[in-house]
Length: 120
Image (cartoon, rainbow, N blue to C red; front, side, top):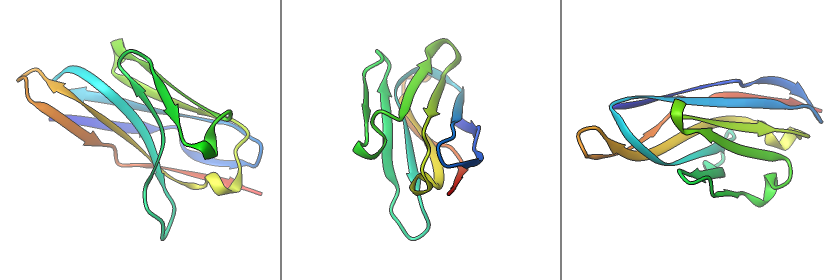
C-alpha cells in the first residue's frame, strides 16, 4: 500500500506564492507519474500539472507560466511551486501517483488534499 501526504497549503494574497509538497511512502519500487489536481466547491477535480519519472511535464492552460511541478525521485516526493496566485486558484489541491510496488503490482494513490486559499 502506498500513502501520499501533502503539505504546504494555506492562505495567501493574490500575487503571492506557495509551494506544495507531496511525499509518497510504502512498498514502492518505482513511481511512474505524479500529478497535482485541484477541486473547488461544486466543480469537478481538474488536472493542474503532471510529471513523469523522466521529468517530462505538462500543465493546464490556466496555470502555464505561473506553476512549476518538479520531483525528487530519491525522496519519492513531488512539488508544486505556485507563483502569481489568483483568487481563482483557490481550491483543495490533491496529489496523485501511480507506479509499481515491491510486490510487482501496480498502484495508484491519492493524497488527502491540502487547501489553498487566495484572497483578493
